[in-house]
Length: 125
Length: 205
Image (cartoon, rainbow over all chains, first blue to last red; front, side):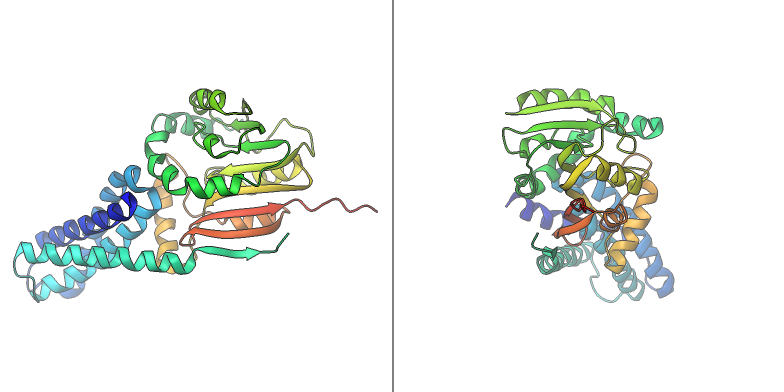
């Protein structure tokens, strides 16, 4: 249970920090392509720092892989949104959406892990 | 002895237990399940600080080797606490001073992410295993899932400076070394895996 809760908290934290960091560097009216690339870069930095900080508590891969998805793809989405000023006008709203994205990514990866987990090859020797 | 690799893991030994704290708890049951298959004379490669000795079934006779003397110093207390025999020796997996056909089982945990010449190291394990002997591995490998694989490639440029590579094709390397794959199991996505292989029995002419 510690790890399940920890994974979701870490994912939500990564989403919040990515959303706030992107909000800090992308302004309404910025070229969307630039905003998306900038958002992705910012998200990568956030995921990298947070991933390494939390890995000793939650495990290297279970931290780094969700953080990568949240940082990279979340950063792009937040950059696109903020360049268009399309919703989440306050910092609180942006943080809440970031947390929601983080939780959804963690949930999705847990489901994907369930699909992939188990035997790939068993020759029966 | 590969002194560059030795120095890297001597330095890593200081923080090894700290960074592997959560992984040991997450993956411990899987390692225990894998190591329950150990039988006969056993070689453990890259013993590290001995954190995985707790997952061995009691009563084994194990030679545990590592390239880092400082890892082995930290492993000594855990080896003494084990309810069986664990002898610790400093060795490079690519150049084992061990006769051919010596072991029934070779066990590794996150080892072939760190060996600079993985196929050479696996060929050494093949040599020291008896015909019909088994290789039990708990390893992380490169993902075949597009973005995850690219991410692990990118991260490896950084992590290999102070620790492991994250993008090794260890299953492929096991086959290249001559082993026959017995079993492959995904433990986390397709990145953390249990790999079981055997050295084919000798063919009598």
